[in-house]
Amino acid sequence: MRINGIKTALVAVSIAISAQILSCQSLPLPAYETALMDGEASHADYDFQAAVQFYSEALRKCRDTSRIPEIERRLSQSRNGRAMAGYCQKPKVVARKNFSLKEFFLYYPLADRSWRPAPNRLDTLGGIFSPVTWFPRGSKEAYWSMPDTAGVRNIYYARDLGTRWSSPYKMPFSSTEDEIFPMVSGGKLYFASKGLFGVGGYDIYVCERRADGRWGEPRNLGFPYSSPYDDFLFVNTPDGRYSIFASNRDCSIDSVSVYVIEREINPVSSAVSNVRDLRRLCRLDPPRDLKKVDNKSAMSASKASDPNTELYARKAAEVRRLREEISRVNRELSTLRSFYNSATTATDREEMQDKIVKKEARLPGLQSQLVAANKDLQKTEMDFLLHGVLIDRSRVEAESDNEVVGVESSYTFTRRSLGSSDF
Image (cartoon, rainbow, N blue to C red; front, side):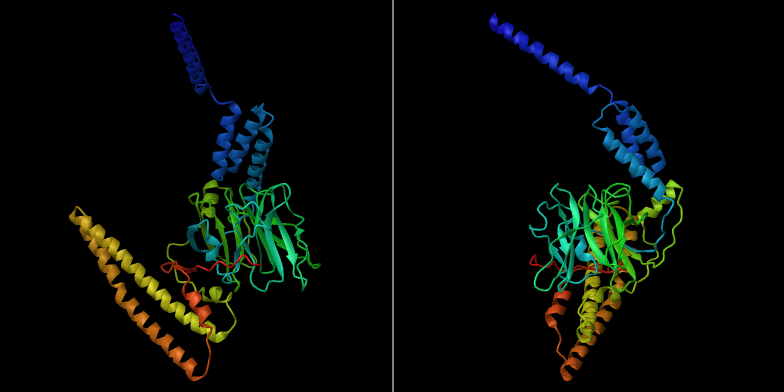
């Protein structure tokens, strides 16, 4: 009887717990949480006016004092977005390409091996958005991101004193949130921050160097360079023709888009009041009628200055580019033939056949170009030998091993090699 009594008590307890769980599951969300979620959705969709209204409602209804600072922060970011929509730039997009978050920075047209793994003495936190430090060989000054004593990433600076490096100097504009990817480009300092005047995530900022050599106050680049998502690593190419930056605004969690923009020296800003237009502007879609862009200067400006080596490297790169394009066309043909063999209707087979014929028609021309490019490269080698010109083959071979991406589009991305962590 006692055992039966214990069983009965356990069953009663189990029923009571289940009832509590069910009642908790059916409890409605607090009123402020609903408004908060609506605010988040509106903000992510660039509807900052609606987000301001939802966050203000959440702030009025919230009785949980621990949540108020976060709601106030989001409200401030939506107000910032509303203000920034009055000063938008409308740049010309050259290219956009998705890369892995782990190595996207290697596809920037910067000096080979200038990206280095951040040594532990500079960065003890690691992290997905700042795994490396940009430090070209021969640099006399260094800018990098590392955590302070509170664990917040700040930007630090040091300079070469000849026999040693100066002590790290923390940049004065540091906020209470992370700053990452500092880059000195075209006499300006660009970096990304979560804590300065912005619209959420990492925004991109620029500082001007003053007459006394110090950096001025940071300024948000605004839309479409900054967004409610993570935007970072802005540089101008060495030839001054393009600006490049990365963002995860339209990517999976483990990738980022790298955008190539035609650089404007004196860009014009204007208001964008329509949410749909602002959303379209920040997508930064390249034009559909893509034309080839002369980006050789952007690629070569970061290499060594020896003109003979550069000439040879350009000709070798052209041979590699044509090989890559022929290989890509053959891969596409293989896929199309596979689709043709698995097609179930005459219409599908006819469509695949048409695509195959058009694709095959490209191969003879590409192969002829490759033959001509190889002959040109061999002739250059013979001319150099006859005139006693020595070529830095190790550097040319290192360049030729780099992966080339985007040969079918307007801009070619070339993968650089990662340098050593030895500073």
